Image: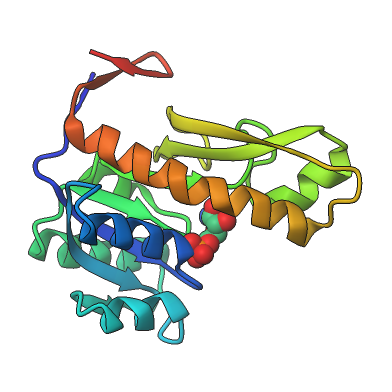
Length: 205
Ligand code: GRF
């Protein structure tokens, strides 16, 4: 199946700090990433990433998720993303699991970033999981979002070493620096539309 977003308009979803959003926004602003940020949506009003998006003068809104059923919240997201004519949805520290409502509305057009080498350490606290398991290498995975959590086709992976004296924080910081590069590369690749998914593999057409 070909991976080809309808346009180069991206919608960024976040829940917190927003450093991945910032990395993407900076590369869009400098022209290194050929994309348009159509909308930034946070499900948390106090998310620093939402404030940063507003400071950049972007179309940035809060759609609260609290106490909403998954499908009802997702339907609100689909409405907002469609209203901004978004071709690719980019999850940047977005701490909600989608229902099929979102995944069906944007088939093969949602990217997520996860700070481990998937399929190792999906879910919460992947850096802690990596240290507990004792792996010597970890990293970041950018993948397409499917109905299965952290399990869609892998677009980009990058590795970092795990050092003997690492803490959860020091490992997370080393991975985060790679995240910022990996996400910009992955968004650019997907937008360029010269890819297909064959089985589980994201490969060149
Ligand atoms: C990142 O580590 C990302 O991989 C994970 O959540 C964190 C978000 O960080 N999904 P930020 O909000 O982009 O700074």
